[in-house]
Length: 246
Ligand SMILES: C[S@@+](CC[C@H](N)C(=O)[O-])C[C@H]1O[C@@H](n2cnc3c(N)ncnc32)[C@H](O)[C@@H]1O
Image (cartoon, protein in one colour):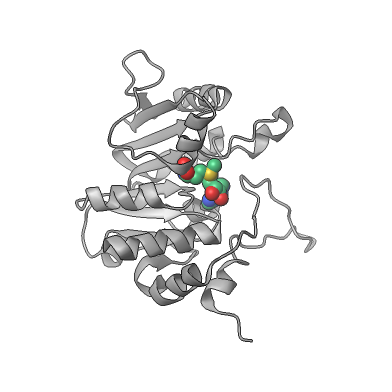
């Protein structure tokens, strides 16, 4: 049977890189590609609506004005999970454009299905490694903000190198932010919150909006996410960080 568009997507979340001797270069990835079941419904939604709501990795920057048909600020969200909170934010903020990146295909299918149900037009989704999208497909000084909600905590010390929030990741994000652009992170792991704070504070181009110089109270404009709800059930605390580019 010929593979459908959604089937193809499951195998292309990063571009292969090779050493000078032609050997495959293994990367430290911030995700494990789980082959969770893509339901028939999610698959059909992806196949039917990718043209309107999906974007593919490209080696040159996206032209946001032609993609969204306006000059509203573009807010990038990395790792949107099933996408419910992202779609709710896009629906609530028609004066902003949203760009969501997620490597988990069933999440991308679910996000597209919910976006179609809500009729949102100011959202595009990408199924690819966000670090490659940032590096290659987004022009410098063009993003209104970055949202990173409950990224994989990689709680064992030997896995901390897999955490997406590292100095070089934040340097890259800052390069892509427009002046006054924001970085909003949230986590339910205290140790990851401390790492986020340290990395964001150390970047000379960022200003912390927290009154005490650390975390901000949970903002009501951030919808409850699936992982946040799970953290709450487990009795975890929540830490929100909000920095802006000078
Ligand atoms: C713990 S989940 C949180 C999902 C959602 N933000 C929430 O709060 O419910 C983290 C998500 O980030 C995605 N992810 C991790 N690294 C990524 C990367 N480099 N590019 C795109 N998505 C990534 C994972 O697939 C996973 O779905």
